Amino acid sequence: MLPRNSEGRLPAVVRHLFPVFTGLPLGPLLTLSLRSLAGRQPRLFDLLGEHRTACYFIDPVDLAFAFTVVPDAERSIVRVVRKSEAATSSVQIRGPILTLLSLLDGTLDGDALFFSRIISISGRTEAVLALRNTIEDAELRPADLLGLRGALARLVDTGILGALDVARQMAARNSRRKAPEA
Amino acid sequence: MTSGRMELVCPAGTPATLRAAVQAGADAVYCGFRDETNARNFPGLNFSGEELAEGVRFAHDHGSKVLVAINTFARVNDVDLWKKAADTAAECGANAIIAADIAVLDHVAKNHKQVRLHLSVQAAAATPEAIGFYATNFGIRRVVLPRVLSVQEIAALNRAIDVETEAFVFGGLCVMIEGRCYLSSYATGKSPNLNGVCSPPEMVSYDDEPNSTAARLSGYTIDRYEPGEPVGYPTLCKGKFKAGGKTSYLFEDPVSLNAGGMIAGLKAAGVTALKIEGRQRGKGYVTEVVRAFRKAVDAVEQGGDAIEIDRILAGQSEGSRQTAGAYSKKWR
Image (cartoon, rainbow over all chains, first blue to last red; front, side, top):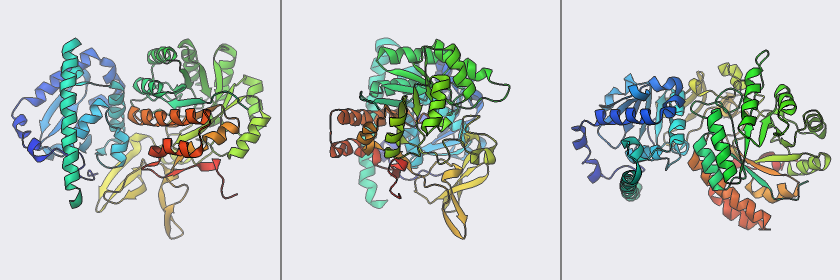
């Protein structure tokens, strides 16, 4: 299913900054981060059961690239891929990047976003459900993904979550301005 | 009939949701184990024994109770899984076990006398005689009422029984006799009552087609949605089908229960506890609904009027279509 509208999409000025990051080793960095998380919180990956070997195609619709994620604990792999590579995955999840990030930190209700078509899924529904329930329970913060603790973790969480909040507000203003076109 | 403060019983599909529900004001949370002993056996959901013990500690530290749903029906020659679940719930310090199967009720009654027994809605006990049977034989302390009774019928029932009653006030509705549904079994080979899952997600697909999206269960098309139209999770009972040349929701409209406006009536009818459905829902949803119902229940307890209750719960009626269900049988 295609996402319903442009709700919560990144403003163009921010969106244009992102292609720069595709030149960075984003995939290997996220792979390391996920494997490190598996070392610290193996239970999260156990919750996924058989679906930990599924290939999830995560498509931020407002960015030029997508990700594939195989959340197989310490064998996890994250790759930055072209949008055309969706067909090779078990599951496809699409939505604005800020909305997808809000699912990670539990700010937004995944069910509500799906039923209202702000995010869309296709492929193996049970694998999506397992991932969604696992993420819901994980209550992940940015510092968890980066493997940080203590005061530094709090500082990083405050900084990143604050920046995301600002970006969401910008995106919301952007959507409101575009609303008459919809 | 109860004269005390009504108890707000809230769903917890995961440890994180349990903490969210408790912090949002739940008097009690209900949850289940990560297997087919509970009627919400979805991937990534539910509790291990260790997580339940931790959840019970958290809830008790915050003045809330934990009720463990072991509410599916045991299979012939395979009752041990259900008995073990009851033993683990008791060891973890659960306040009550919610069960429907006579074998499970009997096991708890004989082996875990310190744990309250609540009769699950899956038992579909709606008469003084049926409830009396469970009270006499297993010492049940509470019955979760099937969602087929009007408020007047609940009041009459409460006058005739001496166990507590718990009534659903919010969330999904089940069209059959409380989960005794053969539709899902027919289409998928899995039963809500035995395997704990209605419309198992491994058999659900959302397929893009020209100008629409089809929601399918095990290959059967349950509904089609226009571009931009909100979608639903495909269950056969709430599907749109063609019969007699007409396309309609053949069995049941896809509506959710919201009996928030009837809290005062349910209290007057002698209901002890109000239950929110939704163990499969996320903590954002649970937090929002529990907070709203906490305020509404407190307002009712303090003598608030219907307008005040409506105002508190106004946010809960946005979005999906809702109904007061059988509580208000206007067709009579």
